[in-house]
Amino acid sequence: MRTPLAAVIVAICILFVPIAFFAVGRGWVSDKPPVHWNPNMDTQEKGKPFRHDQSGVFTDDGRYMRTPPAGTVARGYLHDDDAYSLGVDADGKALQKLPDAFTVDATTVDRGKNRFGIYCAPCHGKDALGNGLVQQHKGLAVPPPSFMDPRLIEMPAGQIYKAIHDGVNNNNMPSYAVQIPEKDRWAIVAFLCTMETGEVDPAKACANKKPEDLSKRPPGYAMWKEKGCNACHTLDGTPKVGPTWKGLAGKTEQTDKGPVTVDAAYIEESIRTPNAKVVQGYPPAMPALPLNDAEVKTLVDFILNDPMLKP
Ligand code: HEC
Ligand code: HEC
Image (cartoon, rainbow, N blue to C red; front, side, top):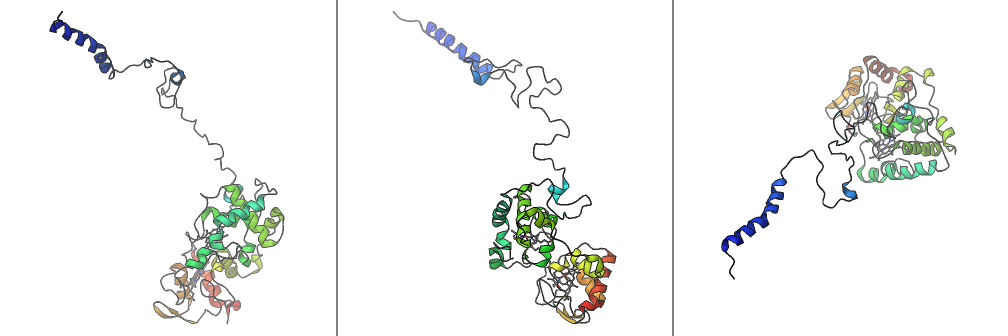
């Protein structure tokens, strides 16, 4: 028996109808949830972050993913204690002790030593004496100080913390705030206090890093310390990162712009625009520090006239 051609064509058409039906259906838009031929737990009726709300619960913007209420702070990100997170007291001055919110336990100093070995030793040295591998091989223009330098022994705990948090002198030392969480920053400070003072209890060690009483000193001397000039300039004749201030007044200084007699104008220029003339034998490493006119004048007077700086 022969099947008529017409019957074959009709049969093929009928076979293709459902396929055509689904192909067209791909483009349909619907508010209804999709049809699932195999209902299982993957396709429960539940809210998912990027889906439109089907439940009618969130009528405001129709999103399942809710915006947190204004003022929400993620757990662990509330920095409302300046002593702990910035290292300063209520007046904004560097803390003279460990912050109350930091609890010292038996592991604190070891943890600090361990973190120091990872993050600080490359420059400041494993023994914290300022001679790390980076310093040995690269010879940084401004060398990292030794923590046994009297200036750093006296440095308030909060200021060491701030060095880690903010960096030092326009990135001469970069900030390590991203790499080191607050608790570890304080552990490093605790370790350094014990190392510097020889006191084993970190709380006592950090509280006894007494700064010098500057009220009995000439104002220029106090400023030499407070503005950090002492990081690079000594008063006793020994060169450091920069030339000593002893015997500077009236001296003929060799600079990259030729010889200069050190007078008030030259000293003021050296402070305000440090690289205008660079003293020979020294790197152009002096930062332009934010000083007001009165402070500059105090420093110039001190360098020119103070008896302690006469040769
Ligand atoms: C990439 C090298 C480098 C690393 C790493 C480094 N420092 Fe320093 N640090 C320096 C240099 C350079 C200076 C001197 C900057 C200046 O006086 O201009 C300095 C200065 C300091 C000072 C003195 C700040 C001041 O006010 O004079 C402290 C405190 C300090 N660093 C602590 C740390 C601690 C703690 C770490 C580890 C978390 C650390 N540093 C890691 C290079 C480094
Ligand atoms: C990071 C190190 C650093 C700090 C901090 C620093 N200086 Fe200097 N200073 C230098 C260097 C290096 C030189 C020599 C190169 C030059 O002339 O720029 C210098 C040069 C000078 C000179 C010229 C000295 C000479 O022999 O002719 C004066 C004056 C001076 N500094 C004042 C200051 C005062 C004031 C401060 C504090 C407010 C200060 N410096 C802080 C590094 C520093």
